[in-house]
Length: 164
Image 1 (cartoon, rainbow, N blue to C red):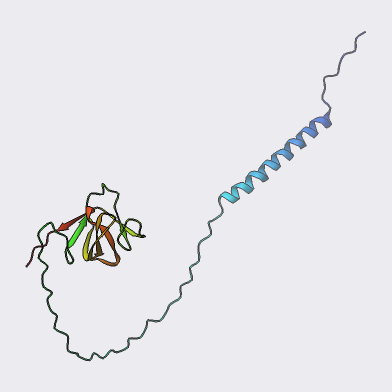
Image 2 (image 1 turned 30 degrees about the vertical axis):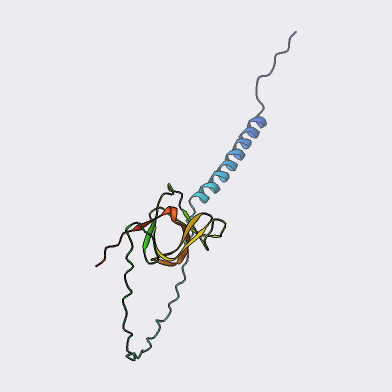
């Protein structure tokens, strides 16, 4: 005799599965609802504090006329077109884009003040000095008094100036 198996599912098992499914759905809702709230949270706005400062008062200035000194015209330095000399203007040439080291005193071993680029203009204010088999000229940038130093003549070209 063979026993037939009972294929019925117990009612408590169905109830347990239903409760388990509800718990899973509740947890999923809580998790997704919190992440959605974070995504829709308004951005915090920056707060600016503005302080008004009173404008300074104007102090009256009394100008006392003084006699101005009469400017004297320096004698023009007339040199041949290619000759570099004190008072002439030069530009940096022949460095192939690498620039020219402008040094604090004449000589290859001296401290480098700055790097002058090709075609940069300078006024010759001192020199010549012959050191390390090179002729050195003291230069000053007409637009910046801090850009001054010594450069080798091999990389300088005189800029022709037309006299008025």
